[in-house]
Amino acid sequence: MDNIKILEGKKLLIVDDEQDVTETLKDLLDMCTIDTAADFQTAEKLLNQNKYDIAVLDIMGVKGYDLLEIANKKGVPALMLTAHALSPDDFGKSISGGAKAYIPKEKMTEIAVFAADLLRAQRGDEKPYKWFSRLKSFFELQFGKDWLKTYREIRAEAERRYGPFDDLE
Image 1: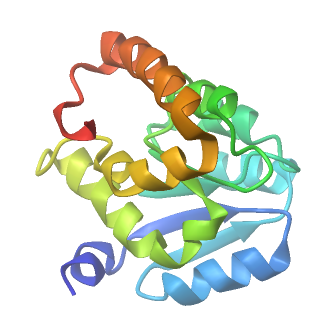
Image 2 (image 1 turned 180 degrees about the vertical axis):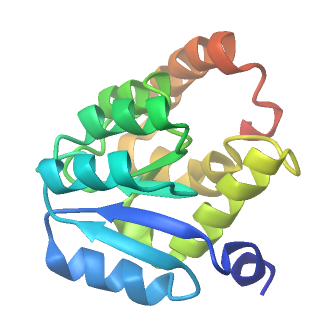
């Protein structure tokens, strides 16, 4: 319930080239005002024309990293949502590129929780990257022990940029 309250009336941009994903996210985030884009050009235009509280960006198919750069310049916190780019390298590229969250599409049904975490962190009500503590077991199961080593290296780099992430381990 608290997640719904913090999201009510927020304006989100959802960018994904899969219409079923976009429709599912719209349903899951129906307490928000949502714009959607299925390609880079449309998303770029919307980012330049509107103010958003969050941008939910797919990585593959829509030039998600380029959109992340634009969102950062506009001061829009970005949540990367991906299936095909679910790897330690893409995780590192997303976080070091300024993404505030990196969520696998397998966890898409929990998008309201992740978006609410992001907004609370933006307000300073909780530590940034709480989303990762929610997904730690998923990443460990998905990528094994090597993932944790890679994660620690990525975390060290990200902490140099953003400060300590006390809640991640």
